[in-house]
Length: 368
Image (cartoon, rainbow, N blue to C red; front, side, top):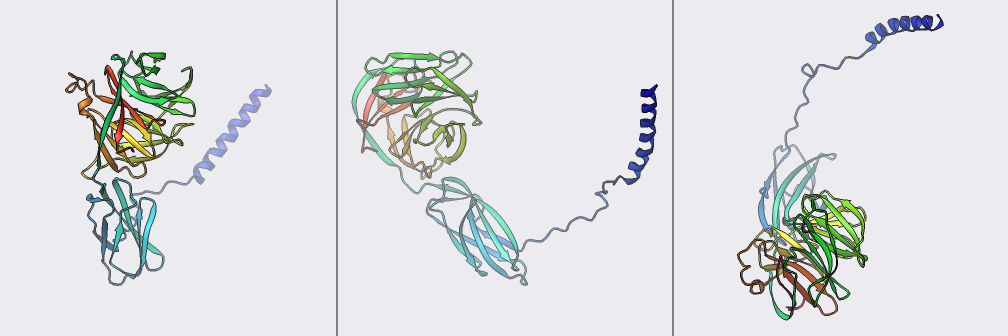
């Protein structure tokens, strides 16, 4: 009987409170009846540059604008390259020149901000495409010696350390990471990936081998000596292709013209560059190797490598290895040049390709 009485009192309380809440509840304003905020007219028109203008690194770009209202007093103008302020000028100058020499390659957004009437400002964004100002140097090479290479190895990544090659191979059901005897071309240790993974590039960082995969956005870390798997990691980059390191970060390619700089502990992206030569974008970057402050990259389906400035994305040089492609492989898209490793003791490179029966030790001329 006690519980029923308590419930009856609670019900009476609710009956009293609900009407009170209904009376006090605020109703949302009717947006259709509210006055619309007036759109402030543009104070200036940006005349130059025109969006998507193509320039070369180092070019000076004219920044020009007109003022729509003669009563407006322009106090100053600032030009930003991305988030970084490039320069500012005081007064109503109407034109100035932005120097592109410190910008990265590819599409860059320049923001022109006009300050007026002491406390007001207006910004205009314009996209520019920046090409390299360098004609890539042509590198020659000398073949030092040739070694056998496992013709069943679909080479995706190659690294030299302590007299051995570390190699990553691809294709679902055939992917692996291996320690290879250079003289024989045979693996001394090999770990197969699960059939669902397509192995891609590898990098040696602090006695650990990092490996990415093609489309599964999963990578693996192995002990350098035993190839025992230490951990796996996830990443947001759409596809894994090549991998290398500058000693601080990992650098990853995804088959485009972009290279991503990755913090190795949590595999988070910290920077990126876009690779351009003096004629345009260099796409399909594949296996990569960081050598003496530069990035060497295979271009998928091509028989040359490009040498890249990691700070700007400019292509500094090219080396053509078409004469080294094995007989019968030149028109086979599945057996292309892929694999670059560097021996710091000799200054030589090891290069090979997908399913190639041969590994070349070469010396670039001039050395990089």
